[in-house]
Image (tube, rainbow over all chains, first blue to last red; front, side, top):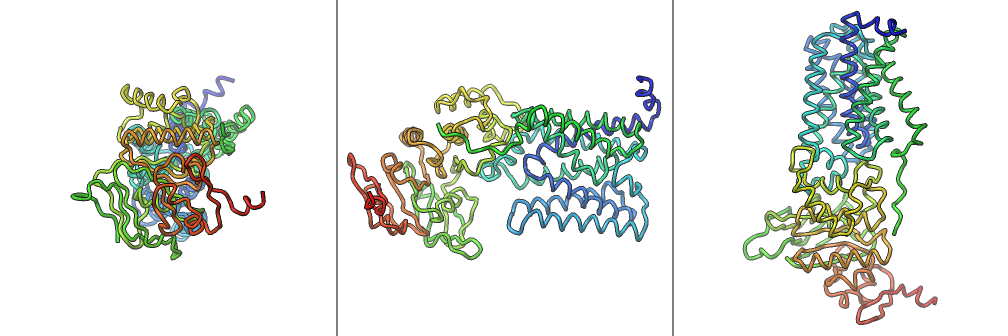
Length: 281
Length: 259
């Protein structure tokens, strides 16, 4: 049994895959806290699809796909955030248009011109064998940057997430803080795309944060707990991917979904329930 | 039109609105509003729903710009803001102490200093909720939630305190406590502007009222504003005003006649 479990660790590509999946899970878990608390779960989903458009366009014109998709993703994220804050034309509809159009463009470009970067399936669902050393370093750099942003802009990010209007009049540059978060979110999605895939990355942003929310009512605790749950799902999911021979994104998300189900059953969804107005004394 | 700093001879003026118009999508909300808020004022803005009370506060906060007229604000004015409880996401995972500390956002690192913890403790103690510092915000009663946001506003040591409907969602005794507390802050030199549609609640505690209905109908002491003529122009319904212990008490005339 143990031999079977340890067997894949003899392969360098698998060790690389496990390291990346664990790091990617932790990164998405960390960023996902802000995504979930801002009610932006759909934006995470849409953004990953928008980034796919940039990935395809970069592949076609021969640009470094990390750079191209990164710029494309950040621009989409800013547009999405602007729409989401404005509330005037229905943020969900606008996000749906921007991101699905970008995704469709990506599919069309790859179909017509062919693909010179990572494979189509790997981009959609993630792959163990598609992970390069450059992917590992990119992910490590994005993780370090994200951790740095969360640590040094902790209160501004928290305040702008909890109550942007009051934060704005209390000295927080909310627009700049939002842009910084969108940058980090785009980079996180981009860096984890190779292992988790476009179609499933939103779940790795949402599930760990939602599970953490059920387990704590402290923001600081939620941050590290969500990161830890994300890392655990990445580790377990990658091992399952090898043994079951299915795409890594799929097993990572299914692991997360199982953890979600267990915690939901154990806590009754505490923390997720809509609050009735507090009782009057 | 726009926002201008106040200085020079008008330095005692913390906030001034000159002929301010505000419209949302072409629909006018405020028309020709003039309001001068001076250091030491304690003003309650009363009016029906849709009268423009929250819009007026947003102008004061600077989160909304007028479509016509001018909003002047004293240079370097420190503003504390207590939002309506209805606008808050109560499932958000923060404790009372975390919520209060948010306002010290200029600090780059997440953990608080000893001086910050001490200051938060002092403010919470003063407002009588120090024992709730580690509780989740959803576990508080309406009155405690109001005091938590007041603590957050006070941590900025504001010169001007703005409160949006601080008496809604709380019972009579808690409302009395809240307004009494605001009276103490005013006595200590804080300028206060609050909105409410609770006429009888503010009459006994707030020295000056502004009746608002798209424009300023009347400004003066409660006895001057709470008259049948002013209230009917403001609320669009006849109201009976009685005097009890020297303070005006407003009754709905139809209900009064029915009983």
